[in-house]
Image (tube, rainbow over all chains, first blue to last red; front, top):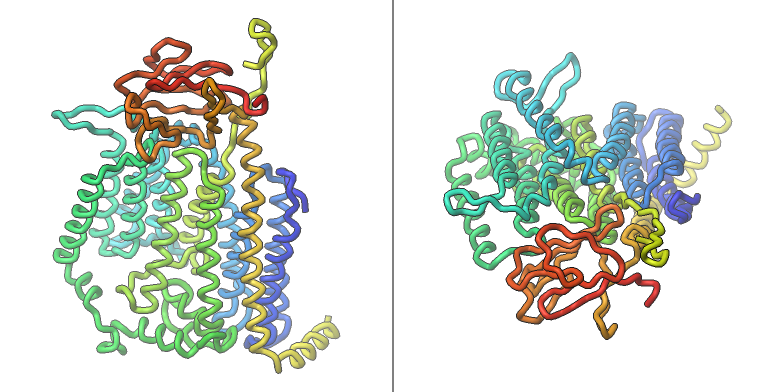
Length: 428
Length: 153
């Protein structure tokens, strides 16, 4: 299938379909289902999503498409995983979330492909963050991160993440002009962003939900580092030492001054209380071990009965039913999204900063989810990007992926040559 | 439909004897897919480069003797003595962060970053952002460079 950039993508589309077909064959052969029509419906829907998106891409004018094909491969695998927990079926809810995520990728791409557009509407993006913060304060009830509308629950803090990534890449040009306040050179935009980070940290502290805090801190850290380095690696040894010492002091202070409920998480021994607060993690570890290399088989696990099996401890649920290799492979595919940004490096500082922030958000969230499931770090209860169930997470991750795509497939304004008679017909 | 279901059920029963092999093969196919997509990204890189050259008007910086050539490969090119500069000079007359070349809508511009010795375009010291045209000379410290069309060299 030849795309608008002149390349034929038939081979990688074929391999993407083959990857899904091979996983679906595993579902047919090793899965637990009542009727053969259950995996057949799942197969039809997964392949429809693939082919439908490939046809959609055919009409899109972009420089790169490999990122999209990798993403639809990840989402197809995610749909297969989510439809098999407990028993093979078809998770229509997750299918809709996957379609929404793909739509959000395109939206994120359209927003971020032109840095001047982002610059023009940056106040709107700050406004959206402000509105989301206010919605958490006013609509979530007593110190919570969730808004309940009937049977639906929305997590506004998830929606803050993509806009938070975006604002850290704005006003790059303003970094050239430093203002002097009380003899100290300052850039106003940097201080606004530091203030915004502090506001979000305080909000999370107030809501007693520090799960997403490392994600925000990593985005802010990477974003500020990129901004300090502007135009290129303007980072002295003194500054590096200062940042390291400052970061270590803040981390030590946060560790010591953390409230009781955080301290109990930080120093928890899950095996000492395996039928109480450590139950979820203990079950996750036991199930992962039971799964072995190739898993018990789709739908044959028992971890799906544990709360948050399809969100916060999904890595263990996949490990149990599909095996450790398949779970690691899913994680590797998400990491490859970041690798594509390294192969096709962005050609502007705005897109580089955006890609670094987006990669930091995805990698931190993945690390928190996987290491939390494996009890290597305290359990934080964050989702695994693109794999976990949940609309808020899918929308946020879709937008973030759209920003990464914009870095690879940014729009160049190709000038039309004008003939100048005074310069001997040479194009100006 | 029922006949098809029966065929599928029979096939699945036949294949269930090889369930571990199928699991391993499935994972290998996913691996292959990932590797092929990554390899394809390298192919895309050449397309992106071509698009970039059109937008950047396929220019390069050369010195008078033609011994030195530099193709700008991003929207902002830092010129200076610092190790991180895209276009690095070892001459002490050049500041560490001397000037930035910027591409906007196919037009290359240059801005001085407060350098000690200044930046000169066609012999005149620049104060603000200055547009560059083909064959313009840019003097950074003691070094003079010319903006030329890459294809003509």
